[in-house]
Image (cartoon, rainbow, N blue to C red; front, side, top):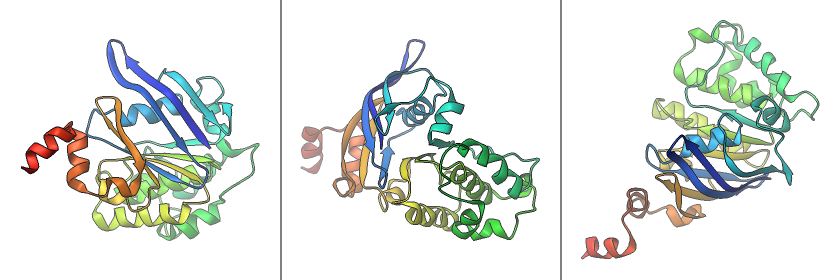
Length: 241
């Protein structure tokens, strides 16, 4: 279980995240929704140790060690950032083998064979250079690389960004198969896609959480959009009139 309590992130005088708390159970998926600039990416970067922060981040009750991204990944919190960032000069197979280093010392949750089973498109191109993959294939490789690092929790930043709808659907089908085996904390802007697998939703606006609860409570796209742009209940009633 990943527990975030009172998380705050600032870049100089700019508040990126303020007093965010959420929990990701080991068998659950949590979606963080919000417009650009809401603090979603900064949240993931803070959890994985990439930016300084205040507040506590715990994994299975233990405070994550230090502020080192390497140590946090070795503890089992593995981040798939926006933009994929695979090693272009290495093959698909080599990318996966390099990533196994982060899981050393812990029980292997996913092998390279498991990745090829979950993402069969990668199996047919295991010898291909990552630079030659399409955007969707690189996203699959980034996810596969995270899996062989033996995560307890996966942090996924905009996993469908820039992908064709059919490719994004395949990515989310993979998440459905993963759910229950690993905790998922997913940052998205395409709410309709992530609501299909999320158990809990947190909505952020201007760095602050402005709504949270079971995913079913956010199924109404009009209500969700109003929450994201800051329309209160009184404004909602006035708009309906």
